[in-house]
Length: 189
Image 1: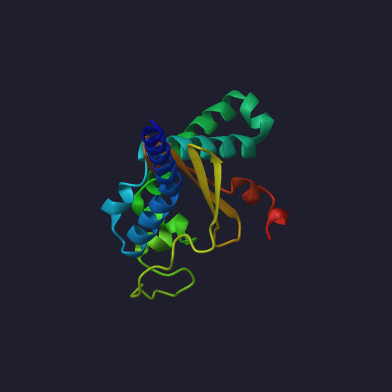
Image 2: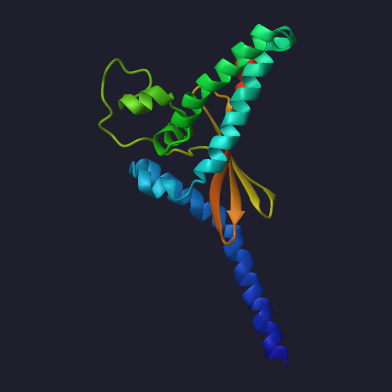
């Protein structure tokens, strides 16, 4: 009887260990895929529909807050906000791709990543592999099913990548952009 109890405890500990190690295994897979510029492997670690939804909500909220109450309350303002929301869809779709997400992880400008140039270079094309995409990241379990990796972007503002457990695997489901830092430069480090 005791052997069965010990076996059950060992199995439970092994499962708990696997679940606890899961985010770090996913982070390493993401790091490797970005460094090797392997979009297919990176795509396996990301829940793109959830990521697009999250990014769209953040950008739309930012646009509405920046417009202010006067713009929101007028008919023409509401139409303008609707048009602005449609325009941000393209930006969100471009960011919610393996190349866009890799650029955010590297702390690089998205457009520099697409053009293959290093940030700050004057037309020089990248000939070396990208740097470690999660260099200096701070990791934290928010719950047994939610894990975050926080990195600083090129401006030093925090970008939070949220991994969510789906069964025994972990995937990136959200990226919290530092849109509040855009509003107030005094918050920058």
